[in-house]
Image (cartoon, rainbow, N blue to C red; front, side, top):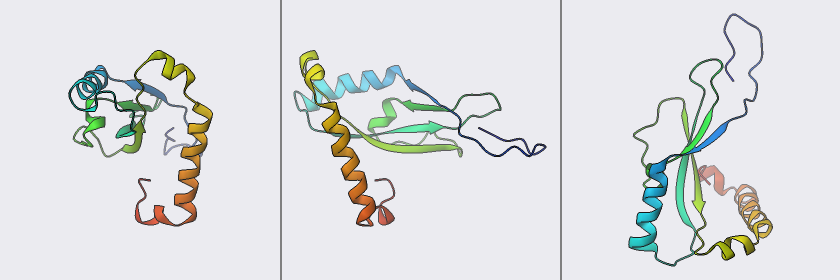
Amino acid sequence: AMASSSTSEPLKFAPFSSAVDVSFFQELSSRKLNSWGLSTERQNLQGSFQCARRIGDTPRFIVGRESFHNETTTLTVSDCISPGSLLNVNTIEEFKTYDKVALIKTIGNEILNNISNGKVLNEPEL
């Protein structure tokens, strides 16, 4: 949230919304059909966190076609890139039986290890 210079309110956390642009699904479909096939390997991508432009606006986290290309051409000075990965499954059954708790633990341990060993100091995008 943004604090007005005429008030003494401290800067506060503002809940944000997330949005998936239709171009994200178009690019995902293209990659699935033309290069990934049935692969279930993690795929790197990125999203962008867009700060509220005006008081009262909701900050947003967005993924779109550019999320697959590491493009930053649509960013403004107040946007922030958030790297991540996509875990793709091939059937609804795979999705339903995927061990999401184990995934969260694995990713959490990766983050903790990168902090503990100092790797994030050289690669803050981790």
